[in-house]
Image (tube, rainbow, N blue to C red; front, side):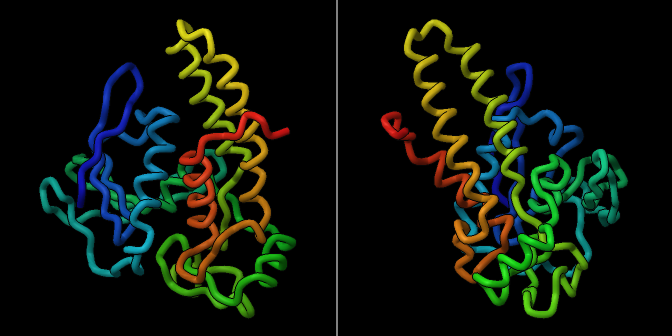
Length: 232
């Protein structure tokens, strides 16, 4: 695992351990809820940087990186959304997949029948965002290995997080007389581009990863390119 630091609430920071090949995140106690909206977006970018290293998740037993005890599979609920992780029985923390982290934060939603039909026109096979196994779209609408339903990044939820980030940045930078104009331009560009992940044909599936990962990549590309303030 590689350790990276991310901003947390109240001016703090947290160090997260990331396994890019397995798309796993280790959270010490309460680190997941401590991340700021901006840190969540930077976590998106950090994992997307290494998407080419992604491989199916091992079925071997998971162990705590702190105490080396076996981790216990756990299912939890965030509002109406179920998500799973492996927790340390010694309360050292928990190990979660990137996909279940997105579930926990309400960033993904199941594909509707209409979206699934549209996806089938553009791709024959995608990888499961939960475990990395291939899904034959001609015959399946969920992963045959882990039973996770085909899901996509929810553009409305992502846009809400970006708005939170923009408001926080605006409060921190009010001494800059140009910040209001820049944030307005940024927001207009984001509102235009965040509609793209909702359109299946706009996603670059590339045959190497799933619909959720394609949406994350689209988001990362957007955030890495300065918005064109002259665009209508």
